[in-house]
Image (cartoon, rainbow, N blue to C red; front, side):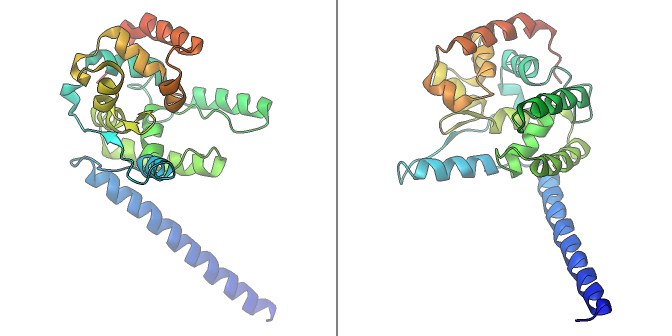
Length: 233
């Protein structure tokens, strides 16, 4: 193949790649727009969890029940914002200061250990992506986050997050988690219970099996201290 032929082949390959990438982004956007009015039944994280549980038990099922925003305790909403994204109402989906801090931490560690993710970014990740920590996945997460922020208001973003977040081994969403840990509905969570649930979010499967871990107790106290200052939609 001569030089001109090679350049034509390369140009066609690049064009095909761009079409594929654009089609993927269009599919993400179509799902996001649809979910503005309809609740997502399953997420990428739920599918990964189902596959993981199926390796241990062929009939294992996830525990998840959708509840409307108004049926979730204000204590839990404030606790999650205080724990995960204190500037939730202020940013456009990305907290650049938190991302810069995470980037510097990762450079010191020599690996992508922290992402500085906002609640909006976690929604993007939970709906479509995996828990894999790479910069390529982070770039895709940012694109989806901007689609989410452009399509939904903050109330909808928080509602979806509270209903799809992983809260234990096969436990997803505020209602299932409230029943799993405290035997109450999500609407009835006390400040202490809400703070405990929010404290589990960085490693819910771990804390599901180690509910008296010192870190969990310390983080719960810290969230309780900041609970009244958290702003929610």
